[in-house]
Length: 121
Image 1 (cartoon, helix red, strand yellow):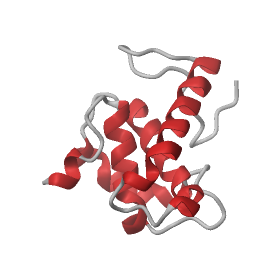
Image 2 (image 1 turned 90 degrees about the vertical axis):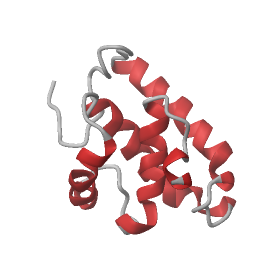
Image 3 (image 1 turned 90 degrees about the horizontal axis):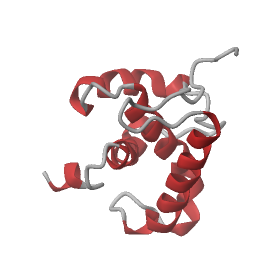
């Protein structure tokens, strides 16, 4: 299989190993969750803006699994740097400062940390 940078991982983490179609189903579940909960987030600009944040949620979700043994504080500089090259970032990608809390929320949720915990600090 030819993998490109930014493709979904074949396996998630050792503990929650989802592969192939399982990964797609896992992302669809997350996408539905964030679509339904987006307006409750402090960075939400309103329901019409979900599509602007969808790539950020996917990036956080994928990153949590790709970097399963690393914490947010360790990988955040790399994620910031790589955001502009993220394959699913979209044509009109948002600036890192605009979307980083959404990336973190999805990262935390994928790690089963309550989303927004970092915002309460």
